[in-house]
Length: 464
Image 1 (cartoon, rainbow, N blue to C red):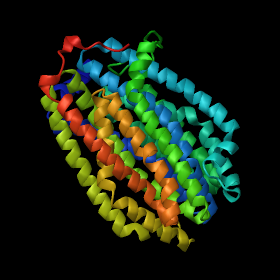
Image 2 (image 1 turned 90 degrees about the horizontal axis):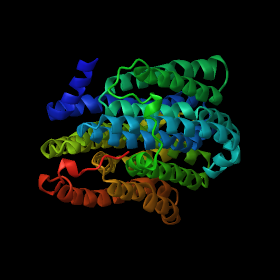
Image 3 (image 1 turned 30 degrees about the horizontal axis):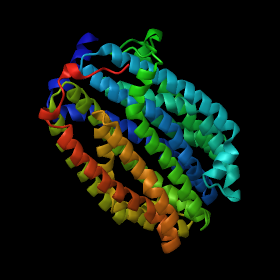
Image 4 (image 1 turned 180 degrees about the horizontal axis):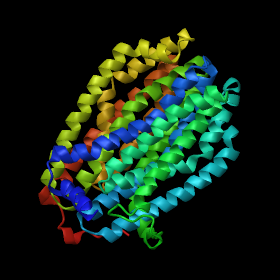
């Protein structure tokens, strides 16, 4: 096993940049796409009920799904950044403390979300835009999803820890197990057991539970460089949490504001009826596949950039970033063209029973499609800031992306453009965030990504 560990570290330190990035990002992309598939699969099977209200109900719960994931990503990505840089600095003890503390804390918070979320589900759904017609179905679906919060939170945390130490393959297999199981269980619970929308939620929670157990098995079998399940590594001190939150907090802010903005979108769309909510819900879920793929690429760059930044190998950092930016922009361009051209057909696939959903959803998809290149680059900028420990830039970008821009636009644009303003708010917000991110990235390149401006390694104080 030691040889495997050494190969992973050697790849990060001196392997070809393209190979290292592919080795880290391909499994991460697959894993994040799988997370999006959980929602897409539910939507596909729920759409077979031929009930626009049921589709809208899953859309109302979607921000809650994002909110739960925010906790896992906060601790997971915060730990991943610390772990990558500490391994690059050859400080294994600090890396293990970060991993263990993040995992245990996220599990405890996941339990709390399961308990309180299930109790207060109705007022939460009202807050996120549930109308009287949608509330009953949304409550059935949301109570189960929130009740299984611990599995999603732990799953996303341990996923990022695995990737940070280079075990992306095991992480992806675990995610794929969950996705395949969800695809198998959805029709069984929804149609075979006649549970309807509740069955979709039960299938999702069971699939996530199995996936989480598989992921944790990597550390239970002592296969990793790190030992996050060892009680002695749990280090709940201000310094440890401070190191985690410097990079985890921007993720939390971005995800929380994303959930809030989705809720605001649902409320704004709700003024135009259940079909409008279904249209915005389907659009967000369809493009979430691309967003999650880009987040996977951003996660994949973090071990490579973080390790080499910690090791002061700035040439490798800059080469990785060039490759990442070109890749992200190319994917965004191709996906944007496809989304623009095939928008009506995609919408008819999900909502053949409602022409209004197809018409409104096609407009919403095309509005998003034309901004996919800047959206992809915004996500990459955030990943770079987190990888090198630039918490301030990561926070500014996260706050601007979903809060400072998008939420006000959701409020303002519908007053001017009506329903089209609801659909244009998110792409407009991402475009403004791209401008901010580009300015921050150019500043970071001048101040942090040049060898002559870096402090010597012995001047760096390890966190924790």
